[in-house]
Amino acid sequence: MASSPLRHSRTGARGAGDDNKPASEAPGSPSASLASGAIEVASQSGDDDEFDLTDQSFNVGDGSTSVTSSVYACTYECGRRYHCFKNGRYPIPNDDQEQDREDMKHAMLMELTDGTLFFSPIGERPQSILDIGTGTGIWAIEVGDKFPSARVCGIDLTPIQPLWVPPNVEFLVDDCEQDWLTRNVDLVHFRFMAVILKDISGVLERAYESLRPGGWVELHELEGMPCCDDDSMGDDDPFKTLYLLAEQAYKKFGMSTTIAARLEPILHDVGFTDIRCKVLKVPIGVWAKDKTMRLIGLYQKTAVLEFISTFAGRPFEALGISAAEAQLFVARARAALNDASVHRYFNYYFWYAQKPPCS
Image (cartoon, rainbow, N blue to C red; front, side, top):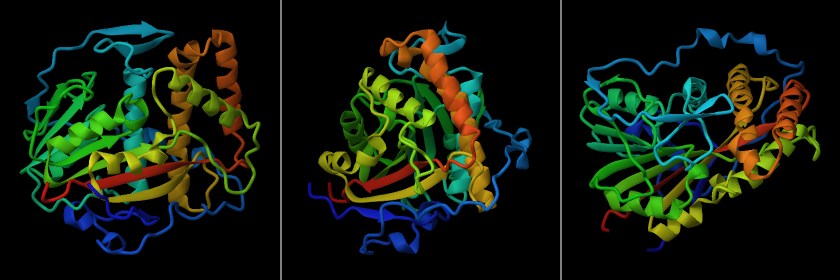
């Protein structure tokens, strides 16, 4: 199937359903630039203590229906807990620390997108929504609250979701790289999944098959390589070096840390049309001038500081890096992040595309 021209946007988001189709994204609108403009730098270095993240609640709340899965077996490595279902599939823990980090990233994305849960124009009364790689389930629960008439199903390899959820939300332990049974879905949502999928084309094909004609797929993805617009980050920057090593390590698992920027041809080849993309810059640290961007930057820095220790586990072991050397790389990266004069950021890609209405 032929795809319509790829659309890129640099704007923020507003609303959900039909409301979250900004005027600049209306069908037939001209292409916009790939990425948002440079983040304005504060005249004085920011301070992490400006915001108290301990006041934020990242709990996913309560509801009225219990999770049915009984797959709870885990293994422990280097002081971190990993799931056992499909053990070894991806090198990321599932312990409380990782769950808190995932919920904090959700809070960060809500700040970044002005509270937008998704961009796809699926209307006001969707009936079926899938959240693939649901993690703690926080996105699925919020979508279920917003659309009480929709059946929302979150799928993940590991059962870390809350025990009580809204009556229209359920969680299943399953492997999205195997066959899907659900059909006639309005929206299939992925967040931070592209990097850990070995067969992303196959997974998107399954998403395509599960969607009703005219349904949408949406992926919110981080490109795992720090960027800089003002040359304050050198080529030998310890944080950049760490992520270059991580890129090599993830390849050992059949994964790519930079796949987020290269999803358009994959979506096209699967058969999706009306492929759209927003690219938003997220500062790493509190160096931005705008207060909201400083808060977002603090969320990102905190999430990164909690995550990079996982590189010293399975990923760097796959490269043959000793435990002592791995800890040294991580320690240097941590120290580098405390220098607010280096203006690092990540690019976040928000892809959404439609299954042709007449398919």
